[in-house]
Image (tube, rainbow, N blue to C red):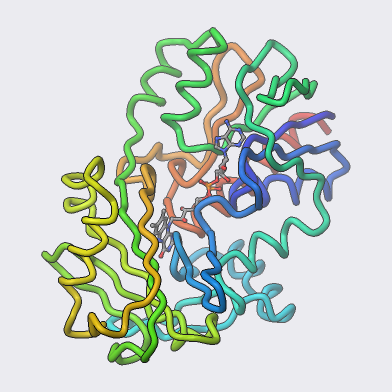
Amino acid sequence: MKIIILGAGMTGLSAARILTQNGHEVTLLDKGRGVGGRMSTRKIELAKADHGAQYFSVKSPEFRLFIDELITEKVISEWQVPQRENVRYIGTAGMNTIPKYLAASLNIQLNEKAILIHSQSVETESGNQYPFDALISTMPTPQATELFQRSQTVLSEADQRVLASIEYDPCIAVLATLNTPSTLEGGGLLLENQPVAWIADNFQKGISSVPSVTLHASADYSQAHFEHNLQEVGKDLLASVRDWIAPESIEQVQVHRWRYSLARQRHPHSFYKLEHAPVYLAGDAFGIGNVEGAFLSGLEVGKALTSLFD
Ligand SMILES: Cc1cc2nc3c(=O)[nH]c(=O)nc-3n(C[C@H](O)[C@H](O)[C@H](O)COP(=O)(O)OP(=O)(O)OC[C@H]3O[C@@H](n4cnc5c(N)ncnc54)[C@H](O)[C@@H]3O)c2cc1C
C-alpha cells in the first residue's frame, strides 16, 4: 500500500519505520530542510544548541524498547536533569541525533511543503504530486486544519470537533553563545513564575564543544510577547537570568518563535481517522504529548494501518 506521511518529526518517522518494516511503500514529505521538526538542534558557528525539545522521559514499554536500541547504538545518553527525580535522556550530539538515526533507512523528501490534498494525492509547493492509498498528517493540528480547509477536504462534525479541541502553547526560545561558561549547576534549571521557564547549558549537557545556552520563555510570557520585536524580547529574557548568565559573557544571540510547542489540550487517543477520507491525524496532540507521545502516536497509527491493509 502507498502511504504518504506529512511531517518527518518523531511521529512521522516512527510511523514510517513500522510501516516500512511491514512492507508498505512509504514516502515522508517535510517542508523543512532537515528532519526532526520540534526535535531540532542548531549550530551557531562552533556552538550547538538544542532549540526545541530538551530531553525526554520513558514511561511505556514500547518506548523503552526503542530507547534500549538507541542506547545500544549510542544515539542517546542519560541526563540527570537537576530538579527532576528520574533520569532523562538526550541525543548524544543534540536532540536531532534521534530523528537523524530514524531517518537513515526511510524515503524522505525534504523541502516539500504539502499545499493541497486531493482525493488520492498530495500536491506540494514545488508542483509535485504524490499519490496515496492512505495519508498520515503529523503536522501541528491547526496547520493540518488550514490545509484541509484549503483543500476542501470533507470534514464531518466529529472531525471538526476533534480538530477544534486541540490547543498548543507557544514558546519563545533564545539561543546564545558565551565566551565564558554559565554558572548553572548541573546544566539545566527549571524556573517558576518567571519570564524564563527553562535554561539549559548545552556545553555541560555535552552536546556543544563551546559554551552555549538555550532559554525557553514560559507559556504566559511567550503568549504575551509573541508578536513583539524578537531582539528586544531576547534582551529582556537574557537580562532576567543574569544570575546564571553574565551579560558580558554573551556573544551571539538568536531568538525564535515556536507557535506550537507542547500540546496543552490533546485528543485522548493516539491517532484519529477522518470520517470520510483515508486521512489519519497523528502527532504529540494525540495521546500523552511530548517526545514519547509522538513516538507512540506514530507507532499506533502505523500498526493500525498495517492491520487494516494486511
Ligand atoms: C520549545 C519546545 C520545547 C519542548 N520541550 C520538550 C521536552 O523537553 N521534552 C519533550 O518530551 N518534548 C518537548 N517538546 C515537544 C516535542 O518536541 C514534540 O512533542 C515532538 O517533537 C513532536 O513531534 P511531531 O513529529 O509530532 O511534530 P513535529 O516535530 O512538529 O513534526 C511535524 C513536521 O511537520 C512538518 N510540516 C508542517 N507543515 C507541513 C507541510 N505543509 N508539508 C510538509 N511538512 C510539514 C514540519 O516541518 C515538522 O517537521 C518541546 C517542543 C518545543 C517546541
